[in-house]
Length: 182
Image (cartoon, rainbow, N blue to C red; front, side, top):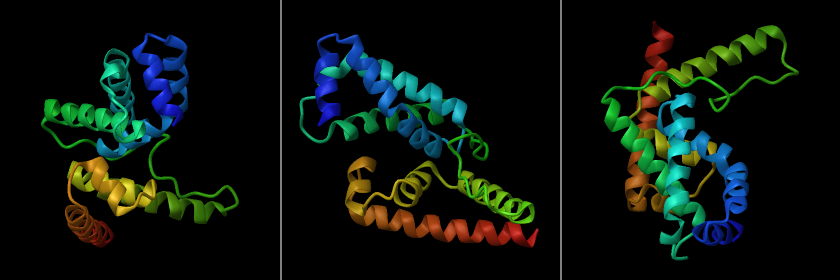
């Protein structure tokens, strides 16, 4: 509800509402964009900034139907897809603050090294997924979204989400097995 109110205020030119919204939700959307861009945090920061520029210009287009969070997420997703199309190449494995973190400060150095190695393997495997597969994996396992929420965000039927998750898990398993065999 607060996000919808902020969008209505932004549509009227309220810079304070824009700043407040940006500060509150930007980290969440950088994580999401980073997942879509195979962990390229620098590109994700740029994509989210571009999305917020669009939000500033087009907040009046949000008519209150659907969630404001979903409206913003679609803009971020579209900007990420545009970024990927403009590059026409596979992004590098995730790095940075928004990547998968498995280490626990209470771990022994040996256990921390094992977890770091496992996280690196997972990052590399995730980077090899298609953007659609990375998106559903991120939303399901990192944001803990339901299948119906993922369907709305991804703009596809729930059965498509299930299929993407099935194939993504299968590909991740193959990639991890291949990495361990090397």
